[in-house]
Image (cartoon, rainbow, N blue to C red; front, side, top):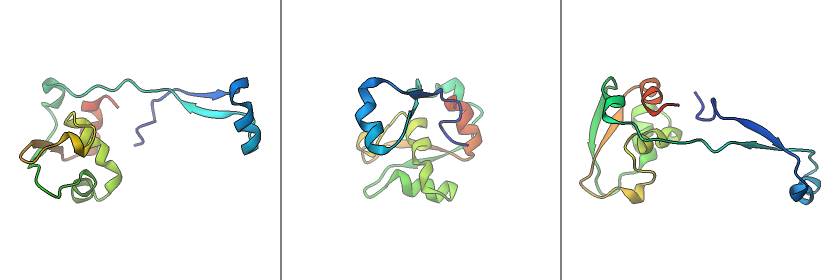
Length: 111
């Protein structure tokens, strides 16, 4: 499942972008509406099986994603699920939850 599946898509043909469209040889630019993101509440997390991980020196979200999901591109699920948008928001010793099933995490995240 793609995180843009339920996102509004619109075509932008505004005069302001005319120079860029001409330069790129396109009529319209496709834009995705900015989604309103929320972190899952405790209630949203109740039915989601998750492993606990203590953040340590050298940890990377993309490595944890690869380890748990077999693909590093789902790092954002772990980050969003924990309310930590980037690795810079995590400190050594922080306890994070890693949802075991992506489908369950998507439901908890409202995706």
